[in-house]
Image (tube, rainbow, N blue to C red; front, side):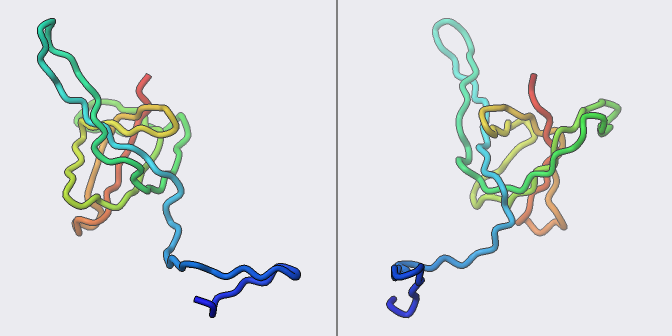
Length: 126
């Protein structure tokens, strides 16, 4: 690949690889599913990482906004848009982990019903 040289002053740098891509995702999150396991002392919930480092785009909302679903009031912290991972089904009962904070999925829909883009409304778990 000697065709791709970067010249910085008197220093020549040869590019070793090229990755084309559009950077529309500004964060990466983990999708966590709580699974129940039965032990000798009872039933416990164990977090299992379903998808690790899923690239997403996040749009934070102001604290005064809220959404009403089925007569339940949910405060909305952000809208998360991500490409649907192949072979994985994300449920509304799953959790989103971002920068050490856990968020619950308040609402989720398949954008344009194409099976490629998920739009999730998330709320921080206190």
